[in-house]
Image 1 (cartoon, helix red, strand yellow):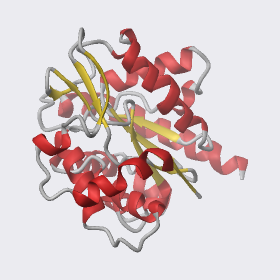
Image 2 (cartoon, one colour):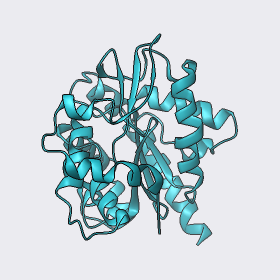
Image 3 (cartoon, one colour):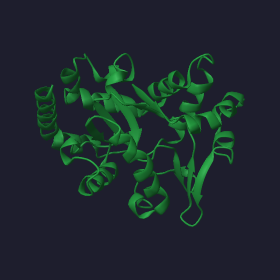
Image 4 (cartoon, helix red, strand yellow):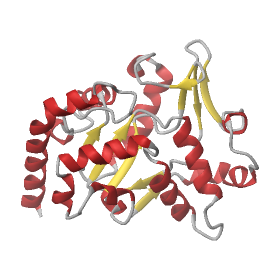
Length: 251
């Protein structure tokens, strides 16, 4: 079963279909601007990341869709069959655009090294972005694209938990998404995502044990990812084992 935030997509669907060019001028425009904090130079734009896989066993959590993912999401809608339901279109968006680009390759490499695919009965975690997509829910702490001073927001400046605007999206949107799922394993991509998840756990929103500890952000720009992954690899593999054993015992 899937949940779709239809109201926003209904509002923007025909506007997306009518776009002739997908560039910063058309997408990062007033048409798709949801909110902004002029003092902190933050802007939040709509992008069609509205699909929620309620049956997911794994949740992979990023910071926020960047410009590349935003453009890919719009492109996926425009290339979709117009006869598809909103759910089908938005599911396709998630498959095509979530963590797309070089980041996805790095992510798959690390997940395979942790042998996550073995716990799910797959040959590779690359299948999570294809035929085994039903196992995973991909999401960001800030579900819609956030830009700081016009650039991709990195999750630290300004602090997500100290910005009223960003914290609102965390508590009113992201947290509700997690609570709609059946205690999936949560894989945070990087330190800034982990900090937010630990905050939510400390405040009783989610269970500490569901959060995989030590997974680095897979961006090619993260020069420390190899070292961080190597240092935490065995601990993460053990945590995966405990999680899936506990899951199986509940069946």
